[in-house]
Image (cartoon, rainbow, N blue to C red; front, side, top):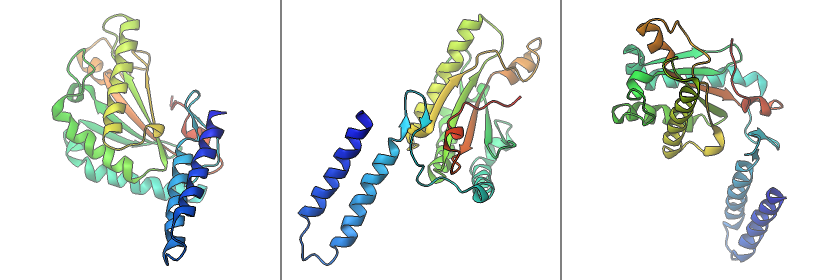
Length: 230
């Protein structure tokens, strides 16, 4: 009901705006088109049901199936170019998944202090560059997933992983990534990459993963589903 009221209000505002334009303005059609486009963009931005995280309307700007691969190829190259130094220093990994999702794994030792959820200031420029690519390639949903090792209680690790994921989401949002494209979740110690019996293994398990999922025409809801790869 709220979504309907919002849509009607926005469209009504557009009509009033158009009516207020000077009738003899030679550019009135272009101005009307720009105003309507802005309002429709706002409406589209509210097509996500924030309770369920799912798309509830036609996805304007969704990728046609045949174009998904090329779009994600270009985005992957942009990530690789912008984050080349981080990759050389083994601070970040970029992986292409079988459904064209891009997976970026951040080393928690570089991005967070031990047992803390605040992003290290030294790592913020890297996240800023990452965000700039996300802003440019906006036909995607971004899932930030936190992980820990098994040190400490399972409940504490779950909470820490959630707080770290939320910190990354907040930073990306501050850099211009729209909040309706961002999802945060924590998985605690439940999905280790390696053994927790060694320090090297525990370090691998402490990580934040960013999954960039394409919004595909006719399959929009899939972009909002929590990423699971086993």
